[in-house]
Length: 260
Image 1 (cartoon, rainbow, N blue to C red):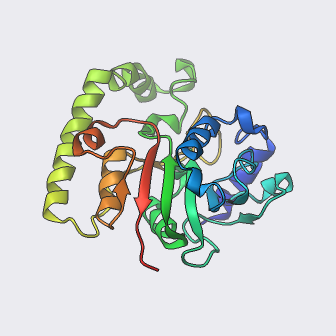
Image 2 (cartoon, rainbow, N blue to C red):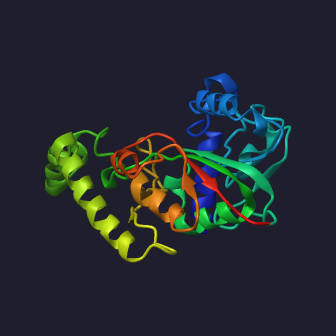
């Protein structure tokens, strides 16, 4: 990855844009993990990895914790193992962890499929608890929703004017359902090693206009679930095809089965 990418995230953490809390209970993902651990008591003493761990606010949710983040500026916040590195090339041996979790990270990974393969590799057979910012919009990069019309030229003004239409839920749902039907047909034809369908976005690493203006991909949960299923994993949070097909946002839980 480029130095610009690396420098951007280190600077955003220093500026409190990312992970601006070190308080465990204040983290947006805390209750999800707490509830998950309550339902999986047998995993409390297992080995956990957080991908995109920020300032380590969740490092004390479990005993055996390791965090990895691309920004080296956050290392000072950790009293448990921390690695500075990329989710696309994690510095861990195969079959190192029992559970991997990640919150609001994958939309910032240039090659999300490669990072998913890394998750499968480092898991010894366990769970991946996954919640990115689904469906990031291409207009986030230039801050169309937060900047005034006066910032833009004619076509920029026109684009900003039509964003409420693009965000109209019936329209968005109709487009999403058609795309999912087409993707599922492809899945029925090629079930093994199904490719990850996602949309690349042009991220803004110069100015942080709004949340996810630096997102470089648009992920949809349904093709993500199909991708994992094609590699022998099960979506335990959405066990039926109908629930998977209708899933819009939120956390998905994937069980990775491996013979070690």
